[in-house]
Length: 395
Image (cartoon, rainbow, N blue to C red):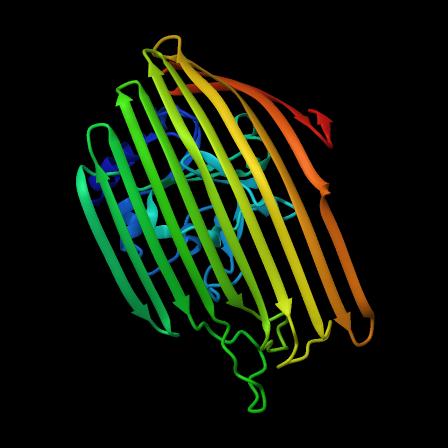
């Protein structure tokens, strides 16, 4: 019975339709790639886990800090590659952090409550997605709209003063769909300091997060689908700067807002997609040292702001049932400004200011791929990409 059940499950996995592998809907058995899908049913069974805890359970995917304090940095390592080589997408739209060096997006800003499924594509996908996807792609697909209006709510509580609230309102009609999702998470956290002596100060590192997501979809006919969206997320955390210093006044804040559209056009064998995303990220780190002293400075403040514009236009055309061509062009532009101030008892004051005029970049990319399934057990994909970067030239 167990063998029969396993064989049936494998058959279902092989025929599951995925979109991340080729940028168009295709059966996983025809992609020739390693794709793992986390379904909505699996997410609902995960209970109170956040996105990092769900992802780190997958084979070949590790997230440092997933089981630490909620506010701990969540660094994504896919197949052991660097964090900036795994691309995070939502509904196929790449997400970046223009305020950071590697541009890798902070998954703490994403709520698990508005996810329909997650497609994890392992292995280099640079032809279609760029150099950010050398290790793979994690594509988060938002909840599907059901017919009629639906209001759902969730309230939960756990240890360490942890509370979670989620409200989701969605509805669908023949030509329009809408969804509004609000979630709030709060936890007093744990004390991560290693000093367990009686004289040590016991201070928990708390975390608060708020997410708001809105989308509206218009389908004037069976060939056209137009979707606009708005995502807002913010979190605030207390954390320790070292293993032996229990910081009582070191905090960080992160505010992120994204808006854009996802348009689809289908005409017989041709499918066209047009994506646009505006991303604004603000990160602040403050240590005023009024309650505790660390070994680095009496006071420090770091402010990192960044904005990014991303646009992608691509199409897929089926020559026949076994050959399909995908080609597109994408453009991204980002700028950042960084301010840092440190006052130290031993090293004196230090400050650094980098403006938007210095920290900016632009990139234009043209890409394409040819997918063939000439034989039942042979899948071949040939692709290429040309990039023109404002700093690194043509590649």
